[in-house]
Image (cartoon, rainbow, N blue to C red):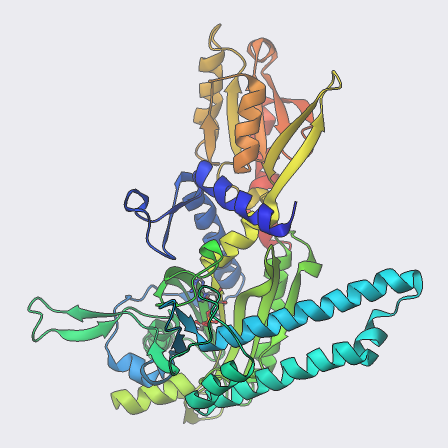
Length: 516
Ligand code: GAP
């Protein structure tokens, strides 16, 4: 199965098992907007809690806030989003389709990259075991030519965008002979800038109502509150503020399911530090955030850092944590050293002093900021795409079967324990219900009595439930149950009285937090 086929199956699975639905589906959906179903919301809540506890509970100097989505319009002038949160757009006159000009060039570069990879694979087959890939990439004339074309095109694109030379971006698209994927023609309009913030009106009478924006990042709610928190919490530098909340971006290129959405959730943390100490904290947070990811158990080699050469308008250093999604390595989180850009601009725009008085040095200054910013929905996709697994099974009688299992880390699974009575009679449902009633205060449990035990196992494999217990006639005699483990499918008999401690050890968030 190709990665593309696997990804399609995952999307269908998300819908079939109540993880993610297209938004307003009865009206044929809304592009790049999604709703989370009964299992999706539990998984999302668990990921959010894992992040929140790791950031606030494991760091005594980090506290949380929950700022409003609506903010004073001047916020977005100060942050630079009114002036610089733009996408360069271009239209094809024949298909009437609109594209991000930079994505057209990046897709072209990807095609050249694919050609290089094909050359490498051909050479690998030709030379067998003696093949030295690094040497081949450094010396093969055809590979070097492709690479040179990629580097030169991306360099021209980046400098034209940085300097606002949109006519040069169009010229590059024409020189590279990029055609519209729909019409196949190269009949392009000029490139224009398009702001990605959603605008709406505040106030009841639309004529005199003020234009405001839906926040495109949660970070600004933290910046404008930093002195409130510092003063009321008597915080000393370095200290951080964490927040989880919705952000909105009018994305033009919306694809890959919940990877790029127009309404999404961010988990952001800004740590305020002494100027000059930002690089040390930037390095600390890069490493801490990577450990947070790796602790989930999806393989350290599926992550990598990508250092930004082209920096956002607010940063003096930035790296992404990229993950190997089914469609390739892509950003899941950004770690940015934002200098005093935001606080300095808010100070100017608001006319209020945003300086911190440092009791150690006796000086007042605007702190520098290092931020970690991760998409909750993107992390959700990371977890599900890594957890999704189709397995061929051989039964005791030699026949074969198949199961789909979500190997979600137990601490994040939507349901921790499924409780099944073997039969719907003989007092077994009551005994099962009694166990549920005792454990439901500690764990998300689900009671199921419909269908065969095998079918019930499959249903819970498909939503990632790490443990299922079966209550049978022996339970009534000796107070033991059969516990079945999701990943190994192994079954063992355990006393009912041991369930709480057994589960706590395996499914508690603490077990995950300890691994960071
Ligand atoms: N405050 C910094 C900031 O917003 P960003 O790199 O634009 O930085 C941070 O966004 C993270 O938010 C990304 O790494 C990604 O996980 C998530 N994100 C950004 N745009 C998104 C979108 N359209 N849909 C889903 N997640 C998105």
